[in-house]
Length: 331
Length: 175
Image (cartoon, rainbow over all chains, first blue to last red; front, side, top):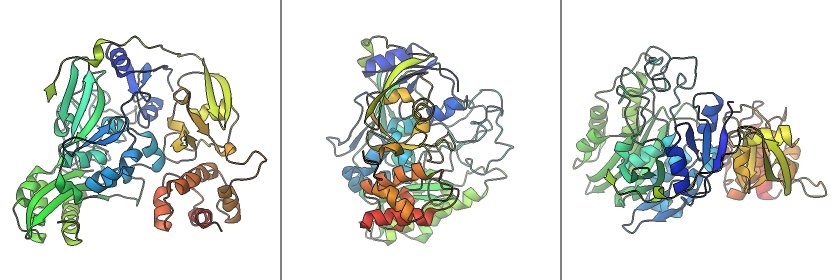
């Protein structure tokens, strides 16, 4: 592992000023991605600014009935919050389906949104990778791509976004609050994650040294009846092949409100707007669910290795919707 | 996206930068203050094993996948391989060596692992036990499915999983 220097920030201003003014420095939060990639020479900061002592913790109810999650709240703390479990079960389920208990005790919520892709070529410094070294090419397009994305891809990158909880946050229209040299900013979760396009190395709109301070989830009564369905190669401790975050409410058998987002199949947490458009106002049932799933995956661009994801994603969507409407979880 | 004016960033002094060479560090490990000189890049795992001779935490994968390095920091189970030692200043670190009582009496979970034959080669065992004690305190021992899920961050290449679960159940049930 390369040499680094270490600073511990006592306040957000010091951390932001330090990292903003030094392109060779990075924030250190839970470290579960950062230290791993540093050791593999994928990330090469000269200096780490430890932000773990900053008062950016807590999981609180916002005045509007929504949720405010401190950027340094740990995944395990958020998942255990009674408020989250009762009002936003999809968030708790997504969190507890990710990583392992030890990693969830370490990983911060802000860091979860900033985590890097798990594409093996990104993590292998001997392989060309546009995300790690812009302009070198994408090894996955013609390489081993079973776990890669079928939605939101470009010829320059097909890496899947690995987060589970970000999928739930995408379904619920979360907002990401930051502080940086430009002041305070708020991003919709959809604007926060970028598809690769021609610039796969740009994963977020944040400037260097811009620090996530909180994640806000607006009040959404529909989220009380929600779930996270994750399909993967192992029963636990594995990234999604396909996942769905879903919330739904019925009035007399008709879908009155619905939120749907997909994980494991796209280059960013994928809000399924097309499927929602089919479902909203439709009669709940296999017919509308299947049509919604078909429409959402219509533009899927699979590789030679991951064509199964297009069909699997549709089945996961249908099962998530059937589960929500069948077991009394809908009102 | 909404934008407000600069606020937090207008103040803030430069931060002290330590390293990259060895720097003095005080770590509280198993109830004792330990002083050492390490580079900031040194993981908690390497600090414990190479500098403090606490070789209970094991280096399996060194990339956060196997759980053999599981220790507690401020009472919570974490992976020592992905933790920088410097980030643990001011926090309490507990390793498998800190589980036994002052007279050397083994922790009930250690005794249960022996009684239930919950290991073969033993390499993953310190991490398994640190996780198992934490899991019990967290209250995730309702049934075997829950134990499995909440022990999933600790791999056992000998596949002693059924006996590990039996040890957890024995401690849960006080048998």
